[in-house]
Length: 391
Image (cartoon, rainbow, N blue to C red; front, side):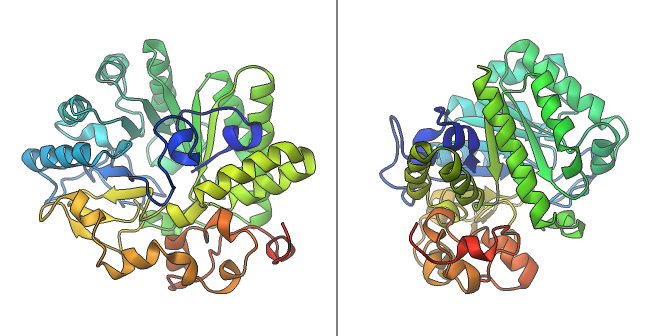
């Protein structure tokens, strides 16, 4: 994740210690931090989204973890001291023991977050999320009105998502908006930003498209449109800060957003650019993300480098604890992933921003080229911007 509010506007953010090595309890290095765990607790979903990386549907999927296995996972993650546990799906709230599992995890001291489509968050459930202690609930929105319903495969999904935001706000539950930038919604970005402002949503994550599951069928956003979208998001983030109502604004799955932001700051505010450089350099971008700072447990108990990389399985929590799988130094792909700079090829290997970007998002390169170490095809920097020279 790239925190635009922190890097572009120099406003302290909740996870600065983990993301940028600043503040109390910060790890010594980004490479040495424990991973945030994205746990797909069920594949079942009440919607059928066009870009679902799980290819979920409204049906039973055999082989999912039973209650005792879920408890064992929580016990291990708590003992391993992971910094956060993100409950995801499918639709996680459709899990028959969702609230019981969340209460159990919170009781073990885990920092809980939620990724949901929002359709099951009524007033009562919003209160339960708040009472359990979720640090935030992330609700997916993929455009305004009919655009969102089209993405989600269900008429009325937009109204239910809007109601979910409002139910959470009403009980004081921190709520975030999660949106995947795609060719279907990128032209509607102004209206989406207006919605965030109008509904006073505190946190927003803009995901770059990854080609997993049904997401493989979507069309990539042209690079120039991506650049324009990032500029628009930066402009609005700065405006919110200037107006005294800063929001936690992040982009996800494209580490090159960091160098792009830095180059813009160099033109606008060199002093702030220097501070952003220090934070980005500590973070290391993609080099310390998948397989290091982020991890995934899927519905069957398989462990992956991130939630989009189900073609690479590192082990299964039914056989041995997550902590043992994650600390295994003998897994060749995981070891290579944690030392990716020496394996990168082409444009990424020779890029001037390698220490800040870390070589892009590796699973996207694999999905789009078939080559684990190929340049990230979604990198939107121009050749003259990546050429090696003094920075």
